[in-house]
Length: 308
Image 1 (cartoon, one colour):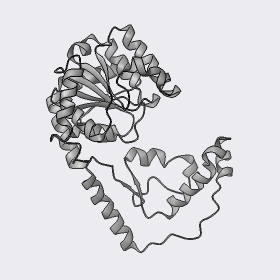
Image 2: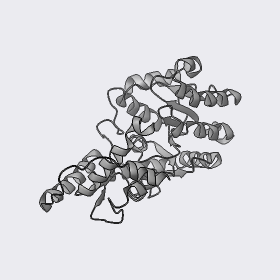
Image 3: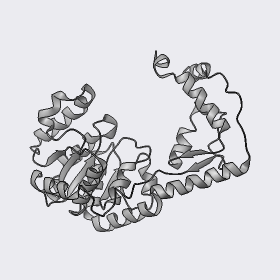
Image 4: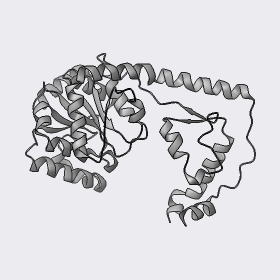
């Protein structure tokens, strides 16, 4: 049934063929290369230890939108937030995410609810498209969103923090960047507590606008902030999340400056494009042609053997 719906047998076969024929496989992180491509279903099609086969080229930030320079939406966003927030001039812990169980929004909120120190130092804001009055809007959301959000709202209410954990409906990238700049001016922290994050475009966009960051230690952020310019937290440990949030608040000036410098040095689309062009030029000069007749795309037997 799953194969009929998702066509895994064709997909795995197509991926194996693409790996075998590719001049170079490009991944966003070294972890993606060493873990994802080492899956047993890819055995024989690619060797993750073959440095000539792989290039790690991370995606980047659109610095025309995500920067410390005010944009077209800043004035309206500043006016809106100065009126709508309960404590508009205080630092905040800022989480921007779709309502998805994998994003572990509840873990971040639980850390805040559990820590009087965090509550004293900062407010908490959740930015998500289409939701700014969650207690009123909850029944209009999808079943999956309600499953994630209802326990979070119950936690907030039980702790008496409905005036401290606030929601913002952010409709566009320009509005999101302006929101980041507003909170960066108030020495705020971007929060990413996903159980796993393959790369992490959101945190590099946030720090490009001047925020400091506390991010999951599972996935891409470990490479993004390998120099210590961001605080890494265990997303399964509420106490460790609280520790990381407090550290990112207390060391805002240093972390924000270092994280922004790292993004501008390594994670812009211009840097990404330049790295791709090098690989493309190398491939064109190699004269390598591994193409041929596309084989039958059926890895069903391989998948059954793996699952048995």
